Image (cartoon, rainbow, N blue to C red; front, top):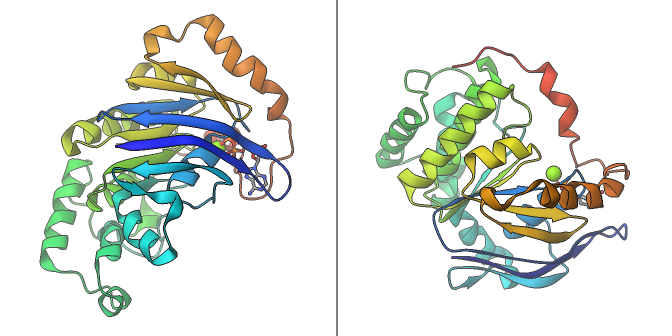
Length: 272
Ligand SMILES: Nc1ncnc2c1ncn2[C@@H]1O[C@H](COP(=O)(O)OP(=O)(O)O)[C@@H](O)[C@H]1O
Ligand SMILES: [Mg+2]
C-alpha cells in the first residue's frame, strides 16, 4: 500500500528534518506518528503528497512511485491521498456542502472545476459523507459559522469524498479541546473501517495516540525510533522518543510550522 523508503529531507536552511525514515503501511489501520515538536512529523506526511519535496529516498503508493511523478502526474496521484489539516483549511465564505464538494475538484475537467460544476453523483455522495461525519442538516451553513469540531468534521468529509487510498492528517486535534479531540479520533477510526483505507495521523499527544491508534511510530530528531502497537510503547520507549527529541523543540521553527501547543485554549469548548 504505502511504502516510505529511507526518506530524507534537508531544508534549504540546512535543517535535516528527516534522516532516512522508512514506514510500511499495509493494513487499513489507524497509525499515529508521535514525537516532540521539530521531530519531523509534519515533514514526513507532507513528503507523501509532495507538499514538501524529499531530498532522498522513495515513496510508493501501490505501484505508483510518488517521488518520481511529474507535476501533471502528481495532480492525478493526489486524488488518492486525502489530507486533513490542523487548521482545517476550509474556505470560510463557502457553505459546508461547497467545502466538501471541493474534495471532488480533482476529478473535474478544468472548465467544470472553474465553474464548480459538479455532477449529481458527487452531490449525493457529499450528502452521504456529511451524514457519515455527523453533519447532516448543516449543508447550507457557512464554514465560518461552525465550531472547531464541526470544521474538522467538514475537513474529514472533504478528504473522504475524494475516495482516497490513504488519508493523512497533520495534527488534526491540536486546535480542539480534549473531548472534541477524542470524538475526532474516534471518527477517524470509523472512517478507516468504513472506507477501508489506512489513516496516518501526526499527533503530539501520546495519550490520544495510545488510546486510538492500532500502531504507533515514534519519531525523534528526524529518525524513527519506535514502530509497534500501543501495548509496546513502554515508559522507557516514550522517554527515548521525547527526551532525545527535546533538544530540537526549542529550535526556531520557520513561519509555516504552526506551534500548535498554544492554540488549544482559544477554541470553543462546546461541540457536537
Ligand atoms: N519550511 C521549512 N524550512 C526550514 N526548516 C523547516 C521547515 N519546516 C520544518 N523545518 C524544520 O524541520 C524540522 C522538522 O520540522 P517538522 O516536520 O515541522 O516537525 P514536527 O511536525 O514534528 O514538529 C524542524 O527542525 C523544523 O524547524
Ligand atoms: Mg508538525
